[in-house]
Length: 434
Image 1 (cartoon, rainbow, N blue to C red):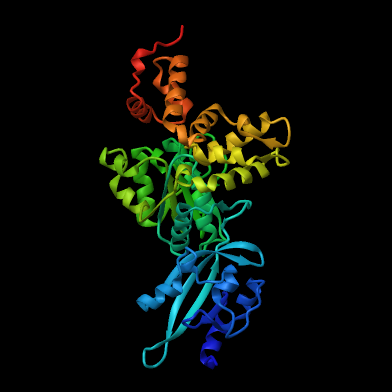
Image 2 (image 1 turned 90 degrees about the horizontal axis):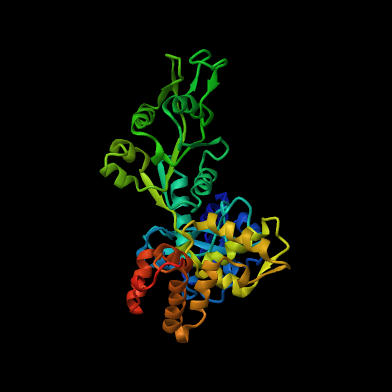
């Protein structure tokens, strides 16, 4: 029978919590945990993996990280990100596992505390990060870890990877979630506009300032300030931003009175800021201020197993929600490399749906670059000969136009030249059509 002290500890935890033995049996449970799952918890009999996953074996025997197994090996706290079978469906959860020791230092069991991740989903959901792939789950771990702190975060990733949604997710998972989330688009801001927008201005501060105005820093008070594309801020304005971050104070344009700033800073850029620092295009001192906790967002080509899920989600939220992709079309979509990432996928989904005359979107409705790539990939036994034949056809069609040919193959020009060398083809032997 579980000790009364442990039962009291479990009941005092606000989040779903259980006490587990070395063999995964649940010996104590609080009401929040019972309310989370549809599977009934029978003390001394129910296994944690059976309730949360409907598994018949521990998670580490099913290809998932098991925090209890890690605790056993190290004797230290451990955490893991899992998708649990809850009453609300498949739900992302962050699991914290803590060894519980007796007075002699012997581990008598483990305390598991569950934290639901509301900003992400493994199924189609509105205003959430969506995915199941390992790179996606690594991103969720970084977001979850950073959200509870006030540390400055720099989101780095290609255009279309979802930096704005990631920033909003961090805000929603933070202690500032009930305060404002203010976004500043840094691209195109000149000096006077930058200061006025960021710090606000007094009435009469400049021509056209007919009233006083609060700046975005003031509007973000207590919440999160998100500076999108911070790499586009000119050098002469970077020093003003650095002063704000170093002192925590600012002045409205036209005022001598200091205002105190209170916000959590998140920045984003598709540019390589470290390289910009080396070239003298971005202040080094500002870079280290904003990049205390850098997070790299994975590209869609790194998340190929998420493409089908995302495509179906984007279709369901479009004006063509009654339509469906065929299995062949989803397979073809998964093979493409998406230089424009999720933003490009959204355009492809809408275009393909528009080209379909009925409720099914098939391969022939996809862009030519994807269809051509699919033709090559669908013949693995004759892959080399089919690839050579397809490239030769494009050479005959476009001649000495490597960029056009590479775009049709959905590859880079550099990769095209490697393939030409492999197939002993020379682009110089083909002339552009009249």
